[in-house]
Length: 603
Ligand SMILES: *[C@@H]1O[C@H](CO)[C@@H](O)[C@H](O)[C@H]1NC(C)=O
Ligand SMILES: *[C@@H]1O[C@H](CO)[C@@H](O)[C@H](O)[C@H]1NC(C)=O
Ligand SMILES: *[C@@H]1O[C@H](CO)[C@@H](O)[C@H](O)[C@H]1NC(C)=O
Ligand SMILES: *[C@@H]1O[C@H](CO)[C@@H](O)[C@H](O)[C@H]1NC(C)=O
Ligand SMILES: *[C@@H]1O[C@H](CO)[C@@H](O)[C@H](O)[C@H]1NC(C)=O
Ligand SMILES: *[C@@H]1O[C@H](CO)[C@@H](O)[C@H](O)[C@H]1NC(C)=O
Ligand SMILES: *[C@@H]1O[C@H](CO)[C@@H](O)[C@H](O)[C@H]1NC(C)=O
Ligand SMILES: *[C@@H]1O[C@H](CO)[C@@H](O)[C@H](O)[C@H]1NC(C)=O
Ligand SMILES: *[C@@H]1O[C@H](CO)[C@@H](O)[C@H](O)[C@H]1NC(C)=O
Ligand SMILES: *[C@@H]1O[C@H](CO)[C@@H](O)[C@H](O)[C@H]1NC(C)=O
Ligand SMILES: *[C@@H]1O[C@H](CO)[C@@H](O)[C@H](O)[C@H]1NC(C)=O
Ligand SMILES: *[C@@H]1O[C@H](CO)[C@@H](O)[C@H](O)[C@H]1NC(C)=O
Image (cartoon, rainbow, N blue to C red; front, side):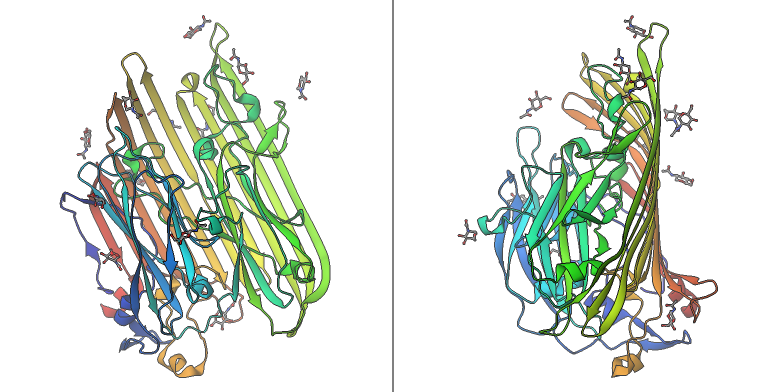
């Protein structure tokens, strides 16, 4: 299985299997099937599964979400009575009938553990399974918890389908020497004691916590989950606020197509996230997303911000506030704009603080800040075109944002003194053309960023997006048609210690020597994931019936990065996993998977 190229043509089954293309996840099966590679590239034969600890699968929840707004599933979680250091969750969902895509969030108490969204069902039914590595949440899984699974859904005469959800956890053990965070603390309104999910109803573009942290912290990272909904679902196609009334009564959505999520510590900017444009399964045109869903749709990626430079402040024993807020741009209509105080309604925001503790009794101190500098430059322009009688018919705009952020301090722990640094460099551009009095919209967006932490982590990303959609509506005949072309990609390169799994877990098992305790030697210095999706689809509706034919292609590659020994000279990229899929009119017509390095060796 590891060494062959699979090629499959799906038969039209009564129940459609939908899926998200993603990196392989390390599971007990993968561990058992793994071919052990030694440093010279020779195979040492199949690895005997590890016998330490347990391999246990437990069902955490079986629940049907019907009319479930404000009624999350609530139930207890009890850890298995054995040792484990890895956990995967298997979310399996079935649905049949008609339904929108819905956002769903699983929590342990107030702490979000999985943000996902649902696929839109067909009358004959769909099913999907997504397995997620949640080993980075280990300290939560080793304690009893209250599981809250919030999937708000609505059933009525037109929208008929509940989502039947099974959540399983598999616990197992590897010779993994990675030290997981000791504590995980939510940055969210505390609502779990009333059995509600932690999503706030009031001001949804901000969440905050005021807390007193332990005084012996050695390293801390904040993770950020941010999802635009309703008026903010397609934020990347919003226009300048000064242009929302360009086409008369049907107001366009404003605050510009730029969004930034800011992390503030006691009101000071500590880091930012420039979001990936997640597109849900009903997004733009649903025919683009069946059975291949959009990038990250079932596993909405969180970003990380290292706040180690803030430890001299945060470990002073006093209370401090951590706040997440979403901003866009307010412009004056003359080409000048500033980051806005708010955005449209609404965003679902959540943060977690991952804390690694120093020895008991020690107190982290230091000098803060050595440097705390952030520069953000914004430029934009827009042009309205009119017909000969003076009616606005087109709108063209562009928005460019650059940000640099540099925060450093001197942190003293029981290990000594270190200079802690968090740096970010980000560039954004969005160019949009709206024509035909608002019915045709072309969006071309590029987001690029690099973050570097002195704790041995760096991440570079690029999120290009192109969407062209054309709408034709005849209100008197009750018909609507939308045609859309889409191209987009996600490229993420991570070097060093990432909090989240990178996909390399399945490929860098310690060699037998390491398993005998000779150290934690990994084959790679970093990972590079690149995936692209392109497609064309249409949507036609008449009254209560609709069809949405389309074609979508996706390519996915995972590479391991090997730096030269001294870190100088070019790094080599080794492709470890490749998958290419093609769907036409709700049918998977091509699915090719390969493991290039294993293929070479075996051939
Ligand atoms: C995931 O869970 C479903 C439903 O319980 C099960 O049928 C499926 O085999 C599981 N898949 C994996 C990969 O664990
Ligand atoms: C979902 O669960 C409900 C209630 O148990 C059941 O009636 C329905 O058939 C299930 N739907 C699917 C698609 O499995
Ligand atoms: C169901 O759809 C019909 C036709 O579009 C509409 O008239 C009716 O209001 C809808 N019902 C609900 C509950 O939304
Ligand atoms: C929360 O749900 C649990 C389990 O259903 C129940 O035992 C408990 O009483 C509920 N708490 C509140 C405050 O409603
Ligand atoms: C034309 O567009 C401009 C700029 O967006 C807007 O201020 C103006 O109100 C629009 N004119 C009409 C008649 O809608
Ligand atoms: C925009 O520019 C016009 C023409 O120069 C000027 O009259 C107007 O006051 C400016 N508006 C703002 C908000 O600066
Ligand atoms: C202006 O021209 C457009 C077509 O070019 C037409 O649809 C619109 O009704 C006209 N508006 C007025 C006020 O005459
Ligand atoms: C918008 O229109 C301008 C002028 O026609 C063109 O140069 C530009 O490439 C267009 N941008 C997009 C995103 O289509
Ligand atoms: C957008 O789609 C329309 C309709 O198919 C087409 O005429 C137009 O050329 C496309 N624009 C771009 C920039 O691809
Ligand atoms: C996706 O892009 C490739 C390469 O440009 C092209 O060959 C293919 O036809 C496109 N597929 C779709 C569905 O647009
Ligand atoms: C997909 O469906 C559309 C509309 O039913 C049809 O025109 C098109 O030929 C189909 N494409 C393929 C490859 O079957
Ligand atoms: C990359 O990893 C190798 C082997 O673990 C190590 O010797 C080397 O120093 C690392 N290079 C960098 C730049 O971290």
